[in-house]
Length: 514
Image (cartoon, rainbow, N blue to C red; front, top):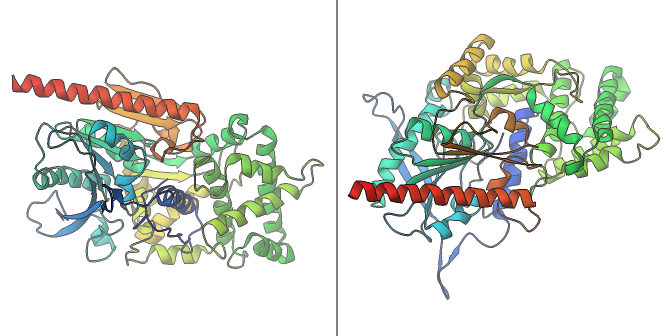
């Protein structure tokens, strides 16, 4: 899951594994790295306003209640936002609210990517709102359990509602200005839920790669990874799938062999420590699984270390004679490429280190919020990626107990409480039976997360776009000459939908005026 911009996206800040090698952590770091490169490439974030004049996106802070559901609690925190008003048509113009997700938010949120690209043609004011407890919007007092109970999607939506009021006053916005939410991945879910819960505040929402259904055992993720590895349209093949399976089988064989074979494996894959413990072996296998999953999830995007085509090329090199070790050598090379791209000297595979760092209650300002996001998965979403289907090419170790074990070890939350929380989330928001109008749901069919979103129309007031062969949040990325015709067509559809919504908003204003 991916996924907000870095603290300052004008600079390239390579992220660290911080000792975390589990699937979710590595995938999020790949997402962060990819987005950083996308939003830090190209010209400066400064806005050219004529000869010698340059303006920068404005950074601001809102004082928000720590507990918006308890009026007697006077505690508050500062929530960061960014504003790009270069193309704003004025007080009656539309407001594009780009929601932050499980990471820090920077000026790129209002300057680059599709929401910002739409602003000039539609005269929009673009606002980026950082999610509470991530980046610099972390309340004072650290990340202990007493504090984290104020971290949830419901709290984030309450922040959005109060931000709507505060920003309307601050910028003297007309009550008739239509607010349109944008978000990708978890933030895409928030965008859809904002329209669901606050239709009087949010006129419409554009939700990209939004996992609307919470799920404890997310085995469907690797089902899509398997299909994508076999998809010739993006560089996969049945041979590639078989090579991936052979590579993981060879890793498992060497782990079982122990001794010199295990030590060689540690050195060849760049593991930071020994692989003698079963729990550390599982960490390694999860990391390798995430590496392959990440190539699928971010396939073809600028900044992604590996595409499916490149990965398959590595796995299949020298496998013409069906050498048992050829795919393993390709997996080694893929691991080295990703580690180098992320600026890492070695891959941590210590479960004990993972637990210790997740227990650290000190906020990591420029990190990706691993403790916070784990808390949200344990108390709301699940999303634990497993490999239990016989068609999964990876190692079929008991991943779900391992993930649920983190909830218990780090937060003292039992597996049954996590399962109950996931069910409550779906009950509260409706899962994939979203009952909101004027929501546009966009997904790529090569993205493993699309199976938790909505890809078929739910009625006349909800629209969906399923982009063939597209990856996670690819529609929100800055446009490139290499973008596929289907991606370009999807962006045109998004633009036309926004035009339709804004026309409806204008007609509604006229009716109310009369």
